[in-house]
Amino acid sequence: MKRISATRWQEVAGAATDVFLHKGYKRAQMADVTEALGLSAGAIYRYVESKEALFDLVVRVGAGMNLETSVLIAPIATPRPGATMAFLRRTLKREGRIARLEEGLGDPKPEDVGAEFEGIVRELYGKTAQFRVGIQLLDRSSLDWPELAALWSGRWRAKLVDQLARYLDLRISQRLVPPVPHSKPWARYIVETVAFFALHRLCFANIPCAMKIVRVPATMAASSRSSLHPRTPRICPGEPERYTCIYKDGGTRTSSRRCVGSD
Image (cartoon, rainbow, N blue to C red; front, side):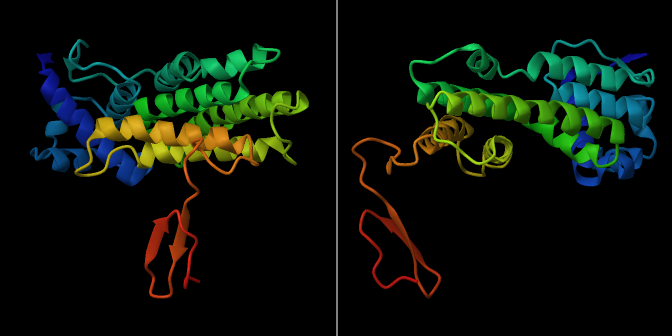
């Protein structure tokens, strides 16, 4: 048994995560991770006993395991059958709750439904951004692992959409939210839109991450809040209406003036 530094474990977990995200669980090979780390053939087995052990490690790191404080003894043993799935079930039960959504379902009538909905969107965005690598890993690996797909998409994500749909139905029945033909497609649209921003728009090169983390949920929440009141033409009171003009040469322009000469 050998002690490995936290920095080295982070390198191993990072390389393995990249391989699983790129190739999926089924096609990923230990040799791919060995190559990504620049190790000699078979050297990855100094760290983990098997691909199952490596995947279990990256799942736990994606769920927030702190490698600085965790005690890991190399090589990490292959987990017992079902251990990784059991860990995911416990993690989703603990971290997968959207507390403000549950509070909304239990609140007979909020004072400000816009603020309530904004809080739900912000919390959902925050959770998705916090666990974005783990979520991307589960999304990719679910394609190769039916049991994981059943847990991740079939149970947890479906439950979230169902909760949000019930929340919309409740507020529609109270005439606090404009009616929609079917609440479930709207709920799924909200969940997927928040996921897109949190997973794919969080950090770009040369843009400070902190700035994106502050601005994106604010924009998402404001847009979602305004969608509850479709007759309101502006997100921010007092702000002039903006027009995006698309011209024949492919150029665009956004201003407070109506488009002239655009398609």
